[in-house]
Image (tube, rainbow, N blue to C red):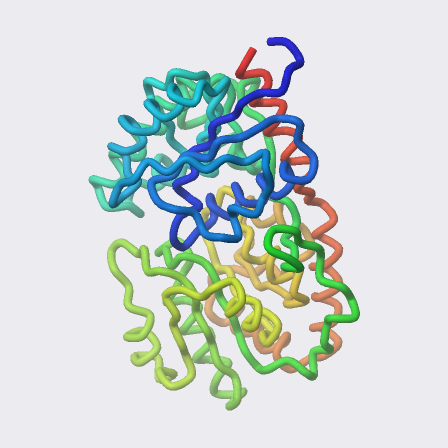
Length: 375
């Protein structure tokens, strides 16, 4: 491949509707490319993108191939035709799978392989589909991108992919909105002191069994007995299997009037919660990365996380790591709710950890993977 700019197709389904982790990761890359890239991009979606996405710049073209659902059939049948029609040099598949008969070479982003490592966490049909298509996509991809050393090792282990084919591009540090698509870290003068924050404990992210929904609520119930003004807000769609009902758990734990579950919050609504919260909880057994605690750090909220290999890699000393014991979780939560000194030290540690992550570095890694794939 010569040095001419590439025409890069992007599977943009994760940008439609209510973007979760993969969609936010893709948005972060695109925001960086809007500032720095020499390539041009066509984003292929099954529905119209939001107005904010269309403001990324003239290097991005949006091609809508309408469908009620952008599922596996759309990916395998419609997306390849669109990639062929636009004459793309290479395809970026940002969310685990890719069209197996892609007319262009492709790079796939595999954030984690939880459905291989823990199939019991997924409905059998969904788990089987994910394992089948992801394994085949990994074998056919020119390059694989992942987001942590932990996930790179898991991909090698479960997909039998050599490390030489896997590139590491973690998410960049979360940033605060200052325009339709340009962001910056939270300025110190915006930050309010801990005594201005509410006694609010926040969790944000999809609800999975591996994230200990019941454990969060039960630990909060212990704290609530000593902190009568404290409340817990959970934000995220319920993807537990077998199903867990956070409202029923709160009721059984005696804190139904102190626990709120919101299935979705806009970015603006979530920003208000972050700026109000004094503690962030993220009790996950397994993640490819786990960006919500970093979002909390960016808003000046200390995070309590489980002590796992991935939390040690990603958060370092920036988060307070605890065991899954309800007493340990409650103790960390209570300390941050009531002790201004401990809260201030935890905020500083979290902010310092953000310097380890850069969208510029990660976008450069993904760009090199695409360039190499197109050769």
